[in-house]
Length: 55
Image (cartoon, rainbow, N blue to C red; front, side, top):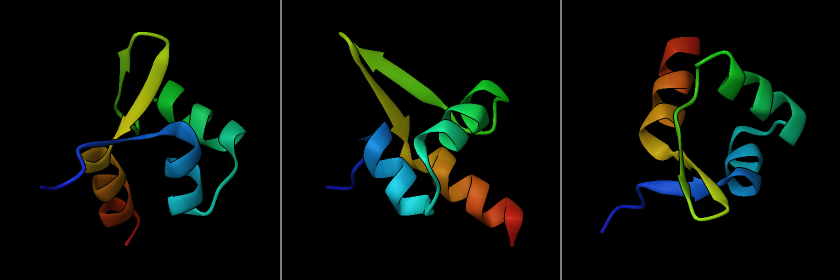
């Protein structure tokens, strides 16, 4: 089964950026997130789309 969402820390590590920059991308609408309880998760599809956009 494919991972659909990852914690903010893992998303930042995957992209090679800091948490502050990751939250900037979320605020700009370039990354989609979901919240389950108190946890914010970044959708892996939006990470892939961001990387494909940059290529």
